[in-house]
Amino acid sequence: MYCNYRLFPVYCICSEDEARMEIYSVSTRHYYAFGSLLFEEVSYKIKELPGVRWVLPDSYLDVKNKDYGGKAIRLIGSSVDDVMRPNHGDEYTTELNPMEWKCDNVLQVLVPIADGSEEMEAVMIIDILRRAKANVVVASVGDNLEILASGKVKLVADMLLDEAAKLTYDLVVLPEGLGGAQAFAKSDKLVNLLKKQAESNKPYGAICAAPALVLEPHGLLKGKKATAYPAMCDKLSDQMVDGNLITSRGPGTSMEFALGIVKKFLGPKALELAKGLFVVRK
Image (cartoon, rainbow, N blue to C red; front, side):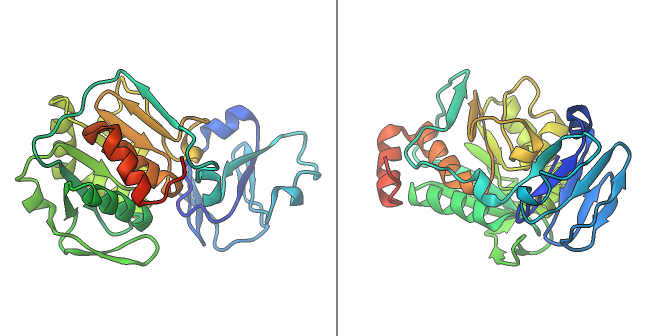
């Protein structure tokens, strides 16, 4: 299950089993399930699908007292505030199968971007890692250096992926954004880079829906514990580290995601310096 821009609550009136079966994507104006358009704009209109009913109310209070034939009202997507960290300083990270992440003198990182990438996630990752003195290569998965991000912000890559793929990296990390994630999943060159990274037991990571839309279909989550955008999984940690894989949940956890990378490669002292720089409460 996937909610792209996360601006409005999305409710499914269905059983628990039916909720697990539904796959959909949501944008600010167009709502889909099983490839069929549900809504052309935000409204109270309910669309019948096999076994379920959907509604986009302004709030849960608008629907909770209504009769839907005895079926439960289940929140499927929610606002971006719901994936932002409520208490800065709390530890929201789970680490399994701990291993040391190593780099030479300078941490080398590849951050791919494409049309539709989530700019908050991309910029947060790039900015924090560069402030930590990493050499971050921003590579466009497309024919142009300039991409149009999901919020209509223009980002300019350092180079095209074809050129970036000739280099080696300590870490390859994917920001999300539905259009960007779809472009990543279709890029044989990027997928091969990720597979090479995994086979070499070198770190790689993804945030929001990218773990589910890019890593999982290509076997890059096999045998791993991961987290993703809440609409795509049950309640998990905001950040998950499993061996050489790091994943996180969304725009509201992207700072924590980048700081987690700093900690794994550069240690707790570097993490504390970074937290002080960004005025993260302890």
